Image (cartoon, rainbow, N blue to C red; front, top):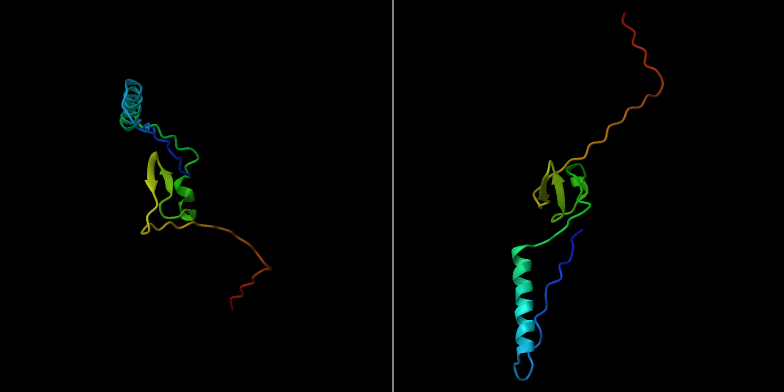
Length: 94
């Protein structure tokens, strides 16, 4: 359900520092800072609150436009309703 976010990798330092390495390092740090300032996470297929009774603690669900997390203390009850008829019933009053 979650999406792994790939972080920028800082380049390995050479034996002697040169401008190419420092430029790579500066770009990598700029990318890390930009990722922290503007995180982009796209969560798709989030279950609705009606499906919450089937989820595990830590799972996400949507409830009336709000993103929520299932905790160990949450209680969700799912309801099933059915009707049936077998035979007839006769009531006699005397």
